[in-house]
Length: 116
Image (tube, rainbow, N blue to C red; front, side, top):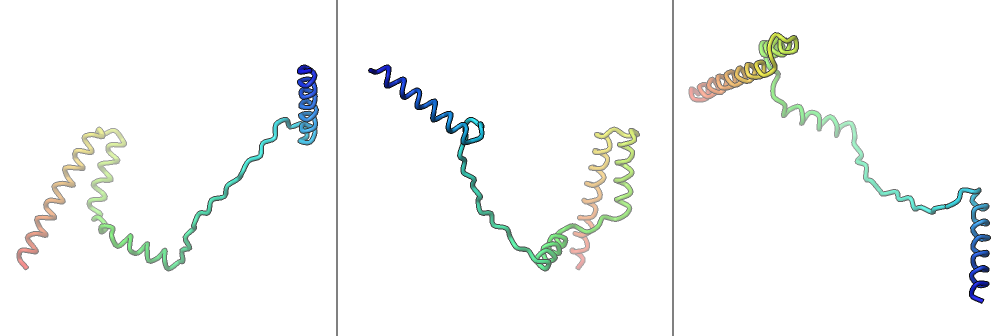
């Protein structure tokens, strides 16, 4: 009797699987998934907000370097790219020049404040 119960269960299961396969167009296994759509707050920015932020950001930038400095560092970089100087030498020369010029500038500013 145990065998007939298993046989009928097995037969019923195969009929049920066949019916499900036909219902899904022969796709076999059909999975139900849940799609989540999280809420993401998007800030609303106006043109005035953007211009004020841009002005504040540019006000904190340092002034424009002199044309003499741009030409020097540009020529130094061009020589390094062309192969006339090695990169470590160009970096050392550029760094030392920047240190010397900045220390001179600070010294001059300190002398001007002392005289006032």
